[in-house]
Length: 252
Image: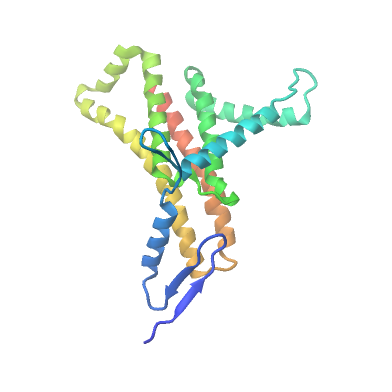
C-alpha cells in the first residue's frame, strides 16, 4: 500500500508532515524534543562565552514587566480615601498573604514575600505561551533552580527557628534509626518539587499535541483553556503550597 503525505497546519509553529501508515508516536517524540530544546539566544563574549538560553531571556522579560507593573500600581497610594485601583490591589495582595499566612503561621511570615514572588512568577511563566513565548517552566534547569531555592529557604527556616544544634538533632527524630532517611530527604524534597512541576507542564504539552494531531480544528480550543490556562495556575499553586508545608514542617 502506497503511503501518501499529509500536512497538518499548526498556528505559529512549523507544519508537521506525516506519512499515512507511519508511527505518530515517533513524530510526536520528535516534535516534543524540538519544543523542549533549550535554544541559545545570544552569547556574552566573556570567560570563553556565556550562553544565554531562551528561558533566561523570557524570565528577564517577565521580571521587567512585573517591575514596571509594580511601579505603576504603587504610585500615589493613599492612607485615607484610597481609589478603586488601590482597593483592588490591596484585596489581591491581602488575599494571597492571608492564604500563605494560614499555611506557614506566625513564625513563617517572614517567608511569605518569597512565596508570593514564586507563585506570581510561576503563574505568569505557565501562561506566557499565549503571548508567543516558550514557558520557562519547560526548561528543567528553571524548575530545578526554583526547587533548590525553595529547599534552601526550607532548611534556613528550620535553622532560624531551632538553631543549628536543634536543626541537627531534628534529623534523629522521632527515633535515631531514621537518621539516614531524614538526611536523604534533603535531596528528595527538591527533586520532588522539580520533577512534579516539570512533569506536569510536560504532560499537559504532550496531551495537547496528541489532541492537535488527532483533531486539529476546533476541539483543541477548550482543552487548551484547561491545560494551558487552568492547569498552569494549578501547578504554580501546588509548588508554593508544598513549599509552604515544608517550611511549616521544618519549623515544628
